[in-house]
Length: 540
Image (cartoon, rainbow, N blue to C red):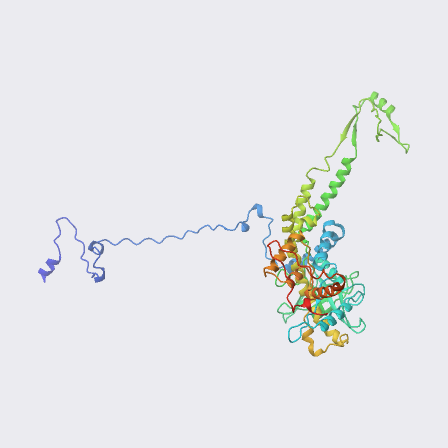
């Protein structure tokens, strides 16, 4: 054993220290490593735990930077309802003031009425279909004529002063000016033959100071009562605008009210005036224009100042000789200048001319820059809002018009969903109940409840080029006749009937008129007449 032990250990050299034998057995799968890595090497000292050094965090968004330059940049998270509870009455009052006294706001409100509603309002089409898919012209005409009688002035409005088109124009005006509009549907035998009429309610009567909470989850914010899900269930209205303060509120069920406003937050219950972002700028611009006009009036007048001489007895004596009397008998220096005459000042007196630099050369460019921001906030194109067509070419005005027309189209769709789409089924119910549709069976109610509302459309900037483009689209199968007609704001069925009537009348008068071929398109093709079997060939 001693010999075996001797063979495993090597004698140490004199003066050398012997390292303890490593009794740890090396696994076979590590045998390929150098032995000096596995044996005899001193273990590395354990690294001391590193102390965590806090890392300075830097914001990566400049919009979230906090400095003295952003101290007035508010970053609080406040719901729109909370802001409106404090600001709605003031904003609405200022908006109404601008609507009365500001030219640009007045023009913008006219633009909203003219482009969203138009001169004739939304056109109604009731495409009552038979089981085979064809249009029942008799039922269609019966429904449309009955609705036209109800939409006349003095029938559809409780006051008897508005037609349906005028009522629509007033509603969009109130939405743009006040941010919201309220329509109450009134039913009763004494209203009209249908027993159904509409009442416009001033938003001022919806008390924005009324706030309450109930244990069952209901709550009232700014006069609007909602359930636990945020759905409006009632409106708390005051009685009269002129005596609104101190009045008792009347609770009106939400099923009687259409509340129109553009919603910007999920829980929003009141609307914001459409011009709220431009109000400050418009007010400042109005003050600037007024000051500039006054300065221009002063600058247009030839004014100046008399500079008196040094105080001496001789000067006062000379001044007394030059004093004249005015028409009131008061003594004064020469104040008015007569053309072609030269007045003599007293000895020692001097005259300094006062000539303010107005109108200023930069006045026009400054007003344009301000109005561009105003137009952006209102959603209108600058050239139309400011009546400024200088430096405008076909491409630029077309681009601006198309962008603005898309905005008007979106507002038309919003108004149609809020008022016109729910109006038709209610009117149809009351028309059947009041006996105004005696020839139509109630059992086919779903056949008649298919109203289609068409808003106004706009003329093209260059009609020739745009019409040629539509002709090419139709000739290449990229558009239909009916689609192009709808883009023009026309009802295709009505247009087909009118064309059929006109062609029938022209057969005996102008035989060549109906045989004229459509003009060839710029692409070399031509538009053929509608195929047989289309509504164009249907008899009225």
